[in-house]
Length: 375
Image (cartoon, rainbow, N blue to C red):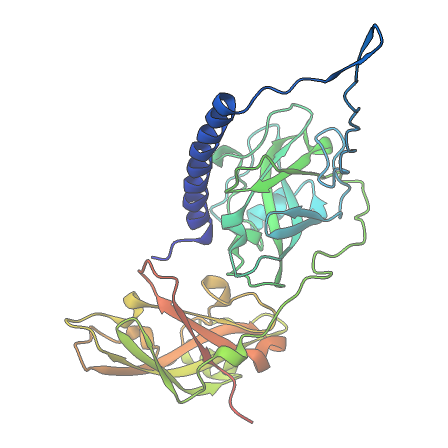
């Protein structure tokens, strides 16, 4: 299993802090023993002795606070920089109980005196590599009662389009989605969203107003964010590359496999408007020493110029013809073939690459395979 960059950063920073502390102790001791104590020089003029005053230092003005405070939060729609993410509230639904209950039949209604308060969010990743929003960012809300809503007890259950379901996001990628809390009716009119990095030694947090009556500020988290294509680094269709003990090759792509997928199973649902089912056929040969199963060893996802990966349930096509993940246990030298499919935004179709990596590994090694046929 891959270590997240946050976990690695934590370990590295802990070592750095320890090392700096040790060096600081040696330096302070040496200075106290070897360096003379300086004093303000005295100037004698005739019989009058005057003391030269030390120069007055003027403190630098504090930089303006762009993260708001609990008493003065940022207005609805304003952009806040939190770690590697830019975040803004695009709207609120103070009474979202009916929407949440309609989303899943097993959701329970809020307790008496409470209501489901849903927040609509936009976020853009501005880091250097890639990450997941739900890993990097922690959110809670607090109202006039001054007690935060954050635990499982304050959960709304299964909500529409949760932002935490967004896939791995690359530089410049923007995501949208919802977050929801069960709050008291007394707090609902004066809630503030508190956002902070999940892993950080800095006490940095943003306070964003959730005023239901406010018109959102016109802004964008994507403004000025830079993104780049990954297609130049991808293995071309028809060429093979090693992914752990497997040698993998994309042999064919069907950019719009929507009808093929719908014909495969009567319970498959069509992609949402603006999306299509994109299917790729793969060959894989096992080169390990004993035996293994492809779907256990290898993780696959796709990403295009939107810079947000298609993975998990959100990127699923449903039941597809001849899935490669149905291949059985494979012994050394054995080869398998089959399909993989993602529900993708049509705007990404001409720029898709497949990301293949070992499911369980301590190495941050992944291979990119082109999913775009050569012209």
